[in-house]
Amino acid sequence: MITHIENQPAAKKWFDEITSHIELIAALFSGLLIVAGWLLDRNGSDTASVVLYLSAFLIGGYAKAKEGIEATIEEKELNVEMLMILAAAGSAAIGYWTEGAILIFIFAVSGALETYTMNKSQREISALMEIQPDTALVVRNGTEESVHVSELKRGDVIVVKPGERVPADGRISKGYTTIDEAAITGESIPVSKEAGADVFAGTVNMTGSVYIDVTKRADETLFQKIINLVQSAQSEKSPSQQFIERFEGIYVKAVLAVVALMMFVPHYLLGWSWTETFYRAMVLLVVASPCALVASIMPATLSAISTGARNGILFKGGAHLENLSHVKAIAFDKTGTLTRGKPEVTNVVIRDDVARMELLGAAASIESRSNHPLAHAIVRYVNEQGISFSPPEHVEDAAGWGVKGIVGTKTWKIGKADFVGNGQAAAFADGAALQFAQAGKTTVYVADENGVAAIIALQDIIREETKQALKTLQDEGIFTIMLTGDSEKTARAIASEASLDSYIADCLPEHKVDQVKKLLETYGTVAMVGDGINDAPALASASVGIAMGEGSDVALETADIVLMKNDLPKIADAIKLSRRMQKIVKQNIVFSISVIVLLIISNFFQMLDLPFGVIGHEGSTILVILNGLRLLKNT
Image 1 (tube, rainbow, N blue to C red):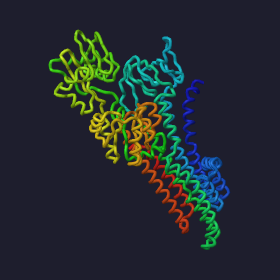
Image 2 (cartoon, one colour; image 1 turned 90 degrees about the vertical axis):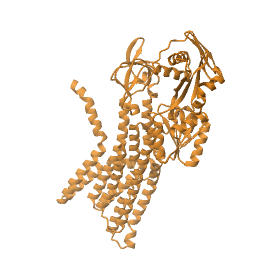
Image 3 (tube, one colour; image 1 turned 90 degrees about the horizontal axis):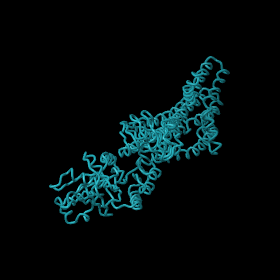
Image 4 (cartoon, rainbow, N blue to C red; image 1 turned 180 degrees about the vertical axis):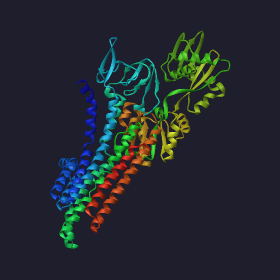
């Protein structure tokens, strides 16, 4: 009994694997029946061969026939599946059982390949869902208890041990560890995390046990958003796919009308025999079917979406993937997109008679009592320098100007130029403040009883990967522009350092929308990249909205594409993937139309027999599907 229970998961997995390939198994089995029927036919067993051919019709064609009949009833529109059913039936009616059965077999194989593409995308989703744990070890009233992740609430404290996956998004409250975030960011190198660091559901705790404060419910986690985004992307069709599907119904009616004429007109106009006329009409029914044309887009689109998701690029639908290939200009938000999103100390100039450690220690001591982002940056910088500092004896805040404090027995003032004296500030270090301002940096002054003692320059630093990402886009012929709410000086400095083509400063959210609309008029197809709530209107206005994965929920919801890691080079990767998909789709469409035209002309001149028509038509369908599946491989 125990052995039976232990083997159940393996048996279920085996059964699920068989079930997922049932369409292909049926197609291959029908192929064996066709071979057996052909051998019996060669030996004169006509009745037995017909029985086997009929079995091949039923077994191989069941899935596609069911799909076609249900779609016809539901949409009240003929489709390519119905055309194939009629073609196979017509072949059998004029005694070409083998050709009709081969038609069903190859059509079934091509259908199984399409199903494989869909199943592969679904398997990627299932694999993602399996990564996220079902249970969590939560600490309540001093005891640990295991609960389902859906029961977790914001504020709960959970324990994650080495080797376990993090069950919910949260922030480490106690402990130190290394986290493998490959499932979220695609980054293969584990990241060190300590108290205060954010962690995400689905990532792996590598080394130490940690206590985590839950910040999001199970249905709100970043991991769940990935799953939802990919699922919605699979159901959304590109404009090209929508056109092909609308065209399919009209085309099928046209083919049936021409086939009906073909059954009579050549007999009277060209003197063909009735047998030849009906035979050519059946060949036309086979070769004129748009199977390859219909299969030109969807497998390629699904493959590209799966590849993007595997590489941290989430497309919310095929339409956005297609639009991205036409992008001629990209507008970037500055803070958190081109830059790291938080100020960092870049320069410290200290008066000659003041000790560096004393000044930085005093500045950090006083600023440690402030919640201002610049104060945090100064404290962080001093800590990174390895300089220790003691708490201040007294701190007095001058709102809007700066802060005054006593460290030891010495009084210090930290703040704007007006707070320490405009004249002294401007003259300090041969006018260093002006140079920093021209470089777009923010300046903080430190003064003691003898006047200005130091000037600290801070700036929101450009990401290391920004320059290379922008250069790659520019090499692709894409115009790059920055839209920022910062001042002209800061914007100019950032744009110059990042080598942007252009920039617009002092942009409020509504101004960003206006600028995006102007870009649309100039370039036609424009992408907007942002991460904040204030970027949402511009993201919605652009042809393609791209959100940084660590951005606000509003930005993530509004965007058409999400970069799971704040990795700008992924934009160029996404565009290359999109253009590669468009290239393959165009190859498929041109190839499939060329084959159909060639086969129709050959049939009209009585140069094409039904077996070769079947092979040419269905072979082209399989080829375009396989060509689309090439997008599953990274380049």
